[in-house]
Image 1: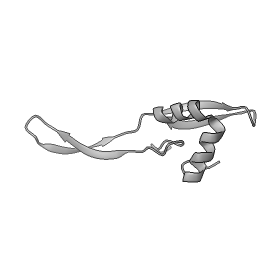
Image 2: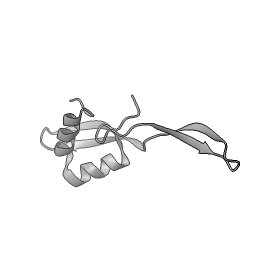
Image 3: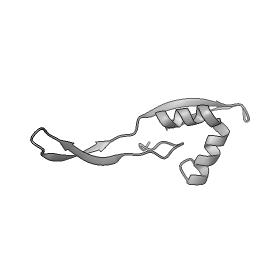
Image 4: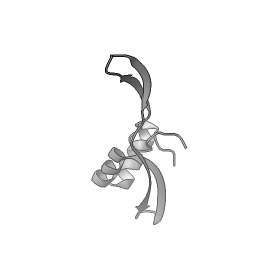
Length: 79
């Protein structure tokens, strides 16, 4: 499974490690992804999603069905 949040679309970005002597080497910033089960009361089934911490807060704030609808519109979630 790829390292992309299925709700917000957050993914790996690249940057630099900067040492004390200002030497720069490439590094990756990974999204804070969690494998989480959500219960969908409309369908009565459990969904397994790979979501970031921000994605979990989004689901808690707007609800699972609305979050999935918005993610599907943006192409992050495929039912």
